[in-house]
Length: 278
Image (cartoon, rainbow, N blue to C red; front, side, top):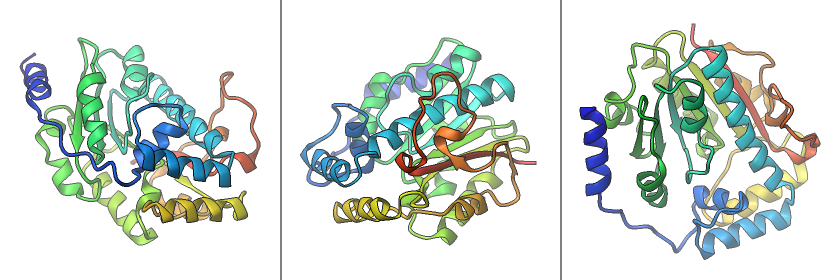
């Protein structure tokens, strides 16, 4: 109860950081494509240009969201995971990760991380936990792994001596090189206990070489460089972790359920997968 009271006090006492509305941000562009209202003219302009170049971008974004839902249910219900760390969470959209996980295990504990101040503002307003569980939010740059892992809100929420599911969905492709992405994942996974999981989704042009290049050009012009990867390159990022079947596939192909709509591979520009730390 004391830690929940401390988190509540921080939510009440915090002062919103400055939000730069003069340029697009990936979280707000994503929000607009999902149909959200927490965005600004530069975000909407970037999103509209992206949708004009790649009309199926909305399909990819929605499929990525459904991928997160299935991942969470799988890890909570079938693997017994009750601790989650979601990096690049974006603007909260219900049902969020903690809502899904806490429906299965009410005592689930979740930490969200993002670097967009508007996400921070909405996190303080919207991210409420079940009475049995706990939810915290960190406003930080994911590249500062050691500082993030030492953040009091994280250490007070997650027990890193027990398995944790680390989600980095539709975010790691903002890291400019494969080597840097691999190094970042190693630093995070080294801090997690055996039995932890890593879930990733990343942009690809494998099935959309022309429109994929157009999408990258649009985003880069708005200050959001994205590195598209092949299936082999995404698989490589899991290194010595144990990939869960069906491995690295387009996100709509990962353990689809009755709620997963039928879409074409050419409409989905994201690979996804999840793996276990031995």
